[in-house]
Image (tube, rainbow, N blue to C red; front, side, top):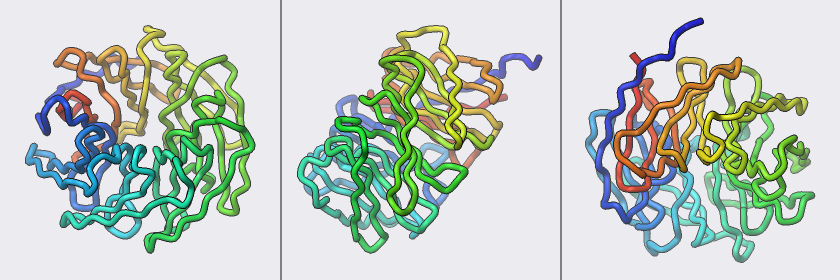
Length: 299
């Protein structure tokens, strides 16, 4: 069995400790883009650590999850502002208010249809926004589900976690929703990603587990060594494995397709890792809410 890979962690200071780097994604310009949830800014960092940022107006919307769009821009949710935002790589920002009051948009991803799909945690809906700003909303069959992170699946449906319904949902382009209940009670799933192995991988913040679900609904769960680690976000890596943040334990973990788990401590204490993504350099990058972005490279 291959040994545990060594990981080199480099942290880059990108804001003060109050700004709250949160969501992170790889942009089309070869840089990483991230949200600052408490400071109302969108940041950009190059693989060598050069940082810039763009302030939102108004700046109290709570920018949360960010994703690269099909139009060469970055799209993000404003959880408190109930808006979807767009920022071009040159820094130009556009905002799109949502039709439903108190929608609470959180997760967002580019769909297979050339639009962006997002969750409305506050309203219990999934939304779709075109690059021109036209919004369509779809209700969910489970009241109070608190849909959270969303990703495009290998079957071209959009897959999302239902944090308070303890389930994984899948929505087709016509709005048809399928719900898969989780075997573990109170698992509270949050992050989800296409693992590249024909399945979706997700993390259970309430149960301290990583889950895998196939498009036909088969679920496997893998317990983490620390059940109180509160795994938050997950992303597929170039190495064929999935990497996830352990928000409550100040670690980043790695899980193989067969379920083997390796964990790596972050150098700064209580750094609160949230979003994670594979960067343009092949390393994994994670946003730390205490004001830094960390790069994890295997060697």
